[in-house]
Length: 84
Ligand SMILES: [Zn+2]
Image (spheres, rainbow, N blue to C red):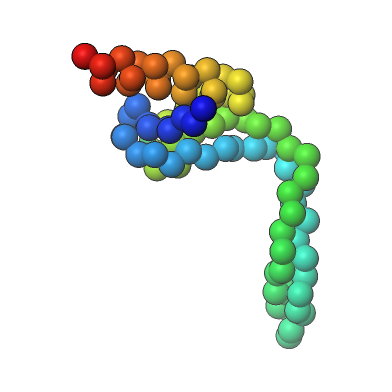
């Protein structure tokens, strides 16, 4: 089952996950004249803080379970509307 996110506030479809307490490791590829150049970044640990609209910041859910539930409810609502 595929769910599409549509922001209830602005109608955009971009969803983003906000995490806190994340440890980011950045590979240093070049050090030149005291400037660091960064290579690949990897994230580890971290806690999901919320899911929000990438466009306006509208908070959608606070956990993956809540997010799926929310998208399920909205998808059902949309499907019903289309049937009428
Ligand atoms: Zn939005």
